[in-house]
Amino acid sequence: MSAVNVSASPSSSVISSPATVTCNFPAMIRTNATPVGSRLYASRGWQLWQGPSAALTPDGITRTADHDGAIYVLPVSVPLDLTADLTCDYRPAAPW
Image (cartoon, rainbow, N blue to C red):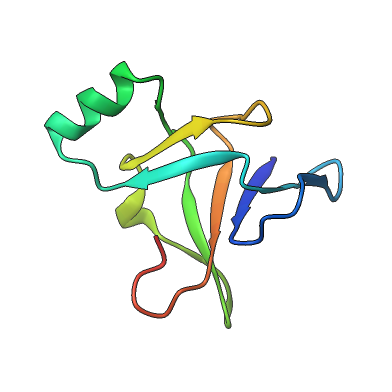
């Protein structure tokens, strides 16, 4: 299973192993869009992330299932597997 880690670092995309792809800014991300917002994003080329979501926390990777089905991405620099795991960097208040 492949995974995509979206990092807050502006460095270039890096393939870290055959099973895990770590991409820094491979796409723009929007979460929790309203139904009207979802249609707007989709009409502008944004795509609904279909894979499971997680956050990289001090305790390790923690699933964020409440965000599954609510994350839109706009690929900008590398092709994305929209069914892969998507992991964001840790933010104490709200991971996504």
